[in-house]
Amino acid sequence: MALARLGVVVLDCPDPSALAGFYAGLLGGTPDDNGEWVDLRLPGGQALAFQAAPGFVPPNWPAPDGSQQFHLDLVVDDLDTAEKGVLELGARPLDTADRSRTWRVYADPAGHPFCLCLS
Image 1 (cartoon, rainbow, N blue to C red):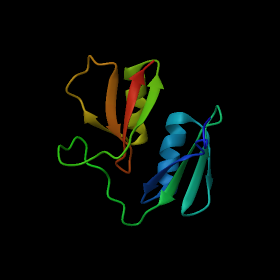
Image 2 (cartoon, rainbow, N blue to C red):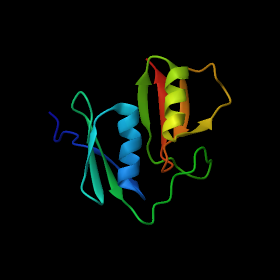
Image 3 (cartoon, one colour):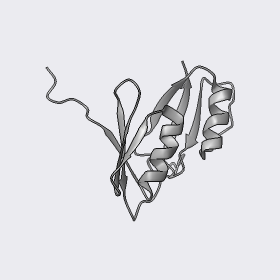
Image 4 (cartoon, rainbow, N blue to C red):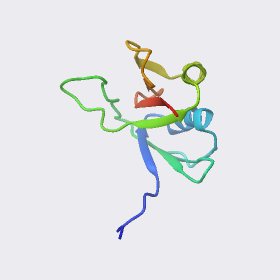
């Protein structure tokens, strides 16, 4: 029996509204902006939240002496189409060495790594 249920994944960032807007463009949903905290309810019931962290330092990926801390795997039907869209939203590629893989690595505008994974 589980002791708890996952409520929301919260990302620290310098600008919660801007980062919530990026993920709303990527995943859908409408941000509920409360200033230093923004909730993004996604289609299907999941949620992401964004919290102001004035001293935020993004993870360095890849870094043999560091940690990415966590990342999101986002499932897509077409990697090329999804890549075009996330780049237009402000993501930047982190790993372009092997385009034959079924996943690609990016950073969101605040520097959090995420992967687009072929369904």
